[in-house]
Length: 95
Image (cartoon, rainbow, N blue to C red; front, top):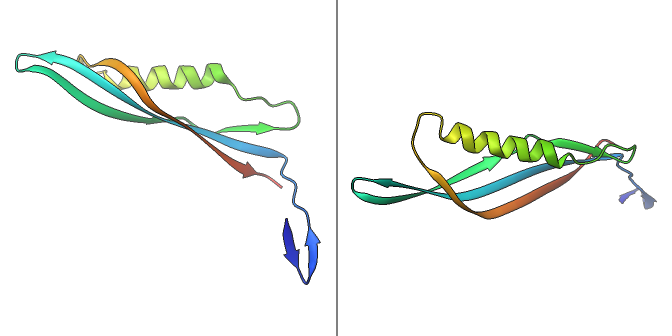
């Protein structure tokens, strides 16, 4: 809601933008013992609208799995132990 010159104007947004941020624990065995590391991943934004455009959970899953795969591309040997933070960021988009 906006107030301009003592008049109230309502704003309607036709879409929202959704981004997901995750944080995860990884571990691997080395000759010195068990090593732990944290990693943080962010999805590409998805625009969700009132005109039938829904959030694509499969796209999100594919992105997160690819992020984990890319994290290990050089053979680091880290294994995903757990996801300890999963944050949805939802913002208004398009008037």
